[in-house]
Image (cartoon, rainbow, N blue to C red; front, top):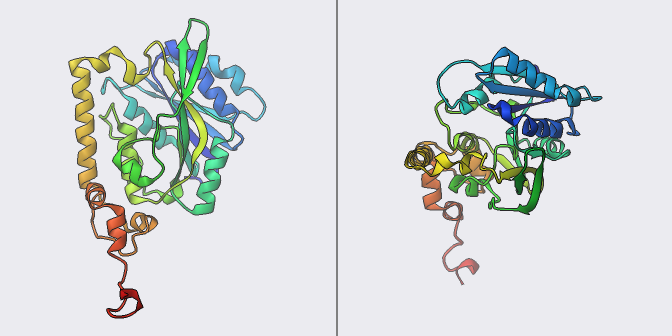
Length: 307
């Protein structure tokens, strides 16, 4: 890390047929009010001609005044076949700025998103700050996409809610790398489902998180009518696809059962007397309110507190 207060944004991209969506995502980064900003575009087994075509396609918007800079990093190994976690790790390895964010190629962030989230990190001293993401129902045509409506399916407002289930898409947060243990900054290489949730569980169990802006919309998640979103593909409903999701859920539950919640995170939850080595699952099962109450000192018997 070079000490700069800039932000690195990792954008994973695997399909040359989706250049129009990538263009829209990158345009949303060009429009960010926060600077400096550097885009790490990580690609999956692209030929040199494909890399050149991507850069040429993005050149018009990246040549705008004060546009972010761009680096392209290609995953050339044949394994894993689905290299989404490997692409994220390429971005982690290349990042050098203080702040870090993710944006999938088919989603967007609003112009003030990173400025707002980074201001919360700077004010609070927390390691990660979250905003809200809305879902845009998008009808896909050959030359354009049409947004048909807006939904708010992601329910939750605290780290305890996040421990229960993931309501924070990958572009809903910004990380302060100066406050993160470097050994936690990776995606499990072979995970192809819930890889970002596994990452968030590990980070948020160790480092205090900021949810002050959880009711402030910072970006859109596109729900595409052509089924191009991962969870909507036909393969997700096959027996093999369903088994893959069940395996991912089992992995996540194992993570809850084996990952301890740090004293700093317990303090942030109002637990004044932290429980050593308590796992995420044990904390959820015992309940935060119960752990808070065990710290309350009762009044003396026969005194005013007992009447």
